[in-house]
Image (tube, rainbow, N blue to C red; front, side, top):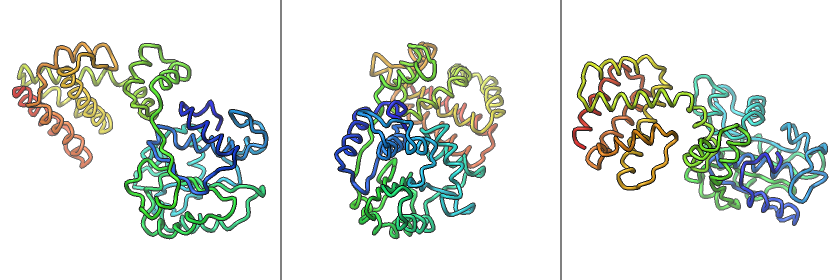
Length: 371
């Protein structure tokens, strides 16, 4: 991956280049940060620059044999390990075509995206003991080109204990000219014995201005919309692209939310029941998106009571929040958010949608009376 293909993270890219040129490359590294901050694209950039036969001052050449094979994820000395669904196959190599397709088409993705890619049933993927055996075996082999071998282990927090323990020695003492890079979203579930054996690099949020430029230049978003979207992205490109996708559905969710609040405020029970009927006809995914949007709107409304300038994705939201915020207070915000959160949890348990949304409308009506 080229320097320009990694969104933001300019200082981190420069540090990587310096380490490689000065030949000060830690053999076992851990990149920690949300996938949307770009840890995987950064690792791919690092690997391509490392192998490049004609390194430039700021980037790999992009045209040598090593660069071309890295761009296609076909370099024989670069190995990938990632969580897989054990019931299908316990090793990453049997999912490599799916992995390659996703990385090349959408390099910023998370575990949910990957799970949907490999399993229609969306069963939880892990990195298991059989994968650790594969990694150890490949570590013992000579490199194809006689130089470095690189192992990228994506989402190491999904390694089970058996896998983690089996890899300890390899992580502590990799073979000569072998580099192991672990790409984690968090260290909370990684064994301390592994953390003590790696050099940690924290991948920070992408700057708001850099996300704004990405939206304008790569996605064709206008200046005003890109500024609003960037402010809500929290430095996370996956979240940014998710917001873009949701834009097409946002108007409908705005309408559902505005209507719910109005009919609940006026205690129009017949309209509340009709509203629940309409929501019940939507898909489970759309229903959950609406409930998450409702939580967002309630939070924005209560913030408006304490902060003058609250940014919203649309002007319509801003206008509604100005009028609606006085009804959301410390007395009812937790009750309202709990109702929407409970709705998401109950949908995950296959609750009856018609009964669920009827209950939510009555919860909201009672909650607004407390404000």
